[in-house]
Length: 261
Ligand SMILES: NC(=O)c1ccc[n+]([C@@H]2O[C@H](COP(=O)([O-])OP(=O)(O)OC[C@H]3O[C@@H](n4cnc5c(N)ncnc54)[C@H](OP(=O)(O)O)[C@@H]3O)[C@@H](O)[C@H]2O)c1
Image (cartoon, rainbow, N blue to C red; front, top):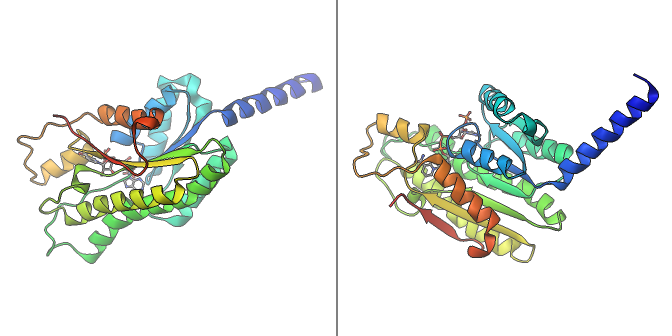
């Protein structure tokens, strides 16, 4: 390759990098399956750069491979990063890598979550801590790390926290899960007060039952699904997308219940 070709290639790379840095960038935690996966794909289809992540490297690699095969033109718009949302060093590293690659963060969807189905007496301290650390502390860590970049980014930002119908009403054998999801609503309302004058909107979505691995695992553990009209993960993704793209319809700090009626 001669010098002219090398210079042209470098200019093209710089242009591509510039194009990606002018495009909106979204982080979706827990985006290797279920609601997070559908949300990530929807944001990608709507011309955003998207960070795909979960706690398991193999699941991340699998999701990235699936996107490469189904949407080859989006190859440069995604970044796959293993990240356990409950570990500060991993959260910080994901945010740093996002800024390094895309230069900005406009959207954060705090979606990663687990559920534990056990009565309160049998719940161990470790089980309690794990649920709270992933479902609630993870939202705190990501919000804390991402907000400074959104504030710096003059066009502002949107944060969607995935709570649950179980963040509005308690359920037997799900105390740690419900406590974490109620907690997300308090966190969302409080942070909304802090960022009200910074062109940043933070909201929570509280879906009813959704047909994903999580609900299948619960049903396998004995949860009665009679009378439960499950949503599809894509329905929740569309609602999240509406909350991002039609923000004026929603109040800052609002938690929106979303059921399959
Ligand atoms: N399904 C429902 O009925 C329902 C209803 C209301 C709200 N929600 C909420 O919706 C969210 C998504 O749930 P889903 O139903 O889509 O569940 P899911 O299919 O089990 O997906 C959960 C996602 O979170 C990831 N994850 C789990 N632990 C993680 C960790 N420590 N760090 C980072 N990622 C982690 C999983 O990947 P890895 O395992 O690879 O880490 C996976 O990508 C959760 O917050 C859940 O509480 C679900």
